[in-house]
Image 1 (cartoon, rainbow, N blue to C red):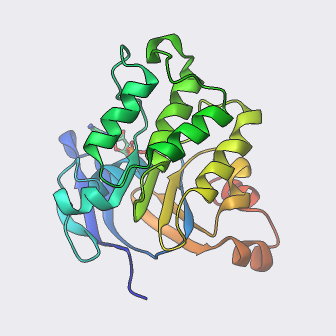
Image 2 (tube, rainbow, N blue to C red; image 1 turned 90 degrees about the horizontal axis):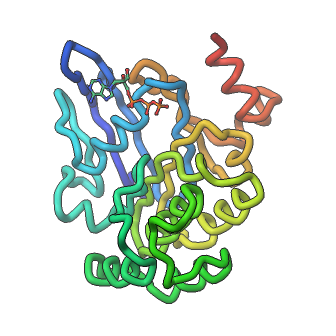
Length: 233
Ligand SMILES: Nc1ncnc2c1ncn2[C@@H]1O[C@H](COP(=O)(O)OP(=O)(O)OP(=O)(O)O)[C@@H](O)[C@H]1O
């Protein structure tokens, strides 16, 4: 099957000549859960923003189903940004209506079920929720779309360890098997059990793309242990 996303010679240079992505090449397949892993400042969020059309590339391109980022690709991608962007005065049920209006592929019944499983009231105003609960709400909204690609930037960073497993199960059970989930995180040991593949990036370049199974078999260690070895300071 053809690739879902192709990253071709992608370069992003910010002001003051800061090279965030350096001629990066990458192919993202369909139907996989993929960890985008790298140390601070390696270029993960920059890559994610370029995929979502939120930044302009300096050189090269990202193609999804052969298309450059634009209105069409935005319909295919469900994106969880690093920081929440919802208005704090909104109630959770208003957020559900907002998503219904905005995204044809949003499934409100799915969102309501997940909110209920986590005991989050639909009447609650976002500003009354803790940071971690707000993050859960945001992830629930993003996972309640029928997207082709879910891009999750640090989805479990603010969530307590007990809720992380529920969140990860939510991610696995709420996407169809042809869709791909690309998630960036530093909490590798928490998420590696749900990953099919990993991409390691350093200094804006891909240094490894492999299956989790291969890393365990060929390197004889977990992804977390291998990451620590490769990126040891
Ligand atoms: N708006 C900006 N202007 C200038 N430099 C930037 C900007 N945004 C990011 N950078 C730089 O680009 C590089 C890549 O940053 P990016 O945020 O993509 O990394 P990251 O892998 O997501 O990091 P982290 O794990 O800390 O979130 C870093 O050196 C960062 O300082």
